[in-house]
Image (cartoon, rainbow, N blue to C red):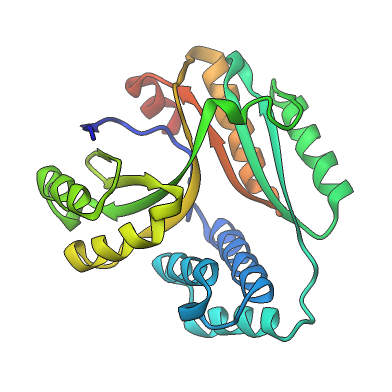
Length: 248
């Protein structure tokens, strides 16, 4: 396992305004409802629901909103959502994976294709991009959880595969199949995580800068802003100083 510090690429820009916060809560609630509908409504007996509830709590979603989302799914009267993965290329040949949860497949496909087209990208076939990523478990802790060495040691003991630490957080990666076990061991050692999820992690990154980098960030922002889109993953490598300038 190798741990290292780096200025992480911007993938999730949450809480920028009340509207963004509301949109985030809607997406978290949708995941809770779908998880509750697909399995038992008890988080202790439903691992997907347990993760969804934990991530909602980490974003300070009110308990009554979480409970309503669970009841909606358990009641069987919730909308039927299709989970779809789109793959495409952004400016500079950057690979982009978009996870969608929608009650209207045609709307979602049209919106995602349009967003790619308007922001210098091209939507590809399933499998066109995902081979450049690994499907892994990801556990995120705030920097305050401990020093880089302490978190690394805890991660090794828990059976994790890799750790990335920077000034804001510690991101721990584990095999998809071992996520629940590793997360449980880390919680005993470091406390409650900020988030625990299954993600697409790039095997390698695509260098990009200048106008292409700015357009790529607009593409990612537009995708994340779509109501049907749950998650966006990409493999860009933007120089730290340029990323800071673009983020500002």
